[in-house]
Image 1 (cartoon, rainbow, N blue to C red):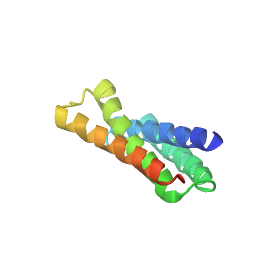
Image 2: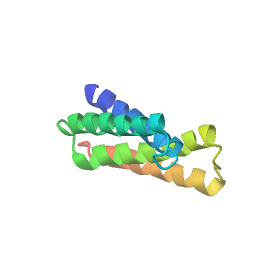
Image 3: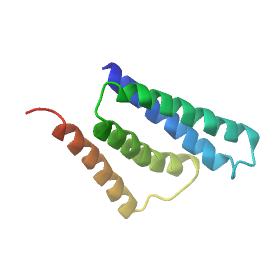
Image 4: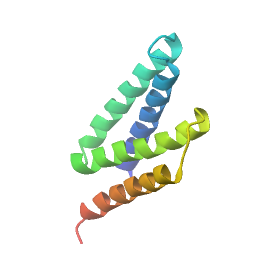
Amino acid sequence: MQNALLLCAAIFFELIGTAALKASDGFTRLWPSGLTVLGYAASFYLLSLTLRRMEVSVVYAIWSGAGTALMAVVGYFIFAEQLPPLKLASIGLIVLGVVGLNLAGKPA
């Protein structure tokens, strides 16, 4: 359970860092730029703690896949980006891939 919480926190801070990166306008705005650095630093630190206890193939797939899928949703709600059907279907495939990797990593 602790592994899942660490990984969820790493994903959360990655989302914060990425959203702040978009808001930083190419690192021309101070506060979003600082939040970008802090978000990614916290994310990588928590990711490193998770990697002590879990396989890198599973952790990285979940972190990057969930981050990608959730950032598309964040982009839709916060930055008014589009979510056309192909993008939604692609997000679904990312989620299926992450679930498949989790299932493949567990003994039968």
